[in-house]
Length: 79
Image (cartoon, rainbow, N blue to C red; front, side):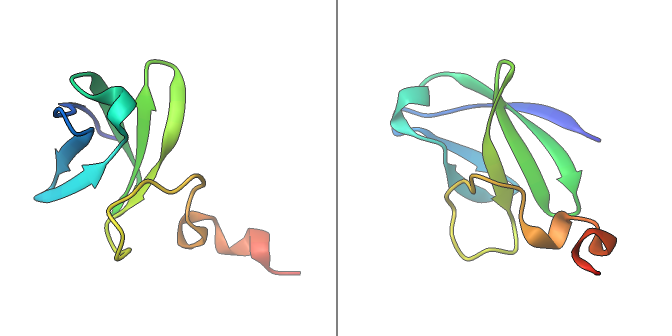
């Protein structure tokens, strides 16, 4: 998996693959880390804390609190 860092601007926004992602004003001027966990899905971290996930396919530019269902193994959802 790929790990990169981004610096949030004064409004708590980072740039990710040409999209502005809102990470929160508390992180203004702070560095956050992103790890690709699935194609088009990145996990956002601040130090050891997982802050959420960003899904490039979703219409929102806000973080998701949990890993999107499409990223979970399909076998886990079958009975």
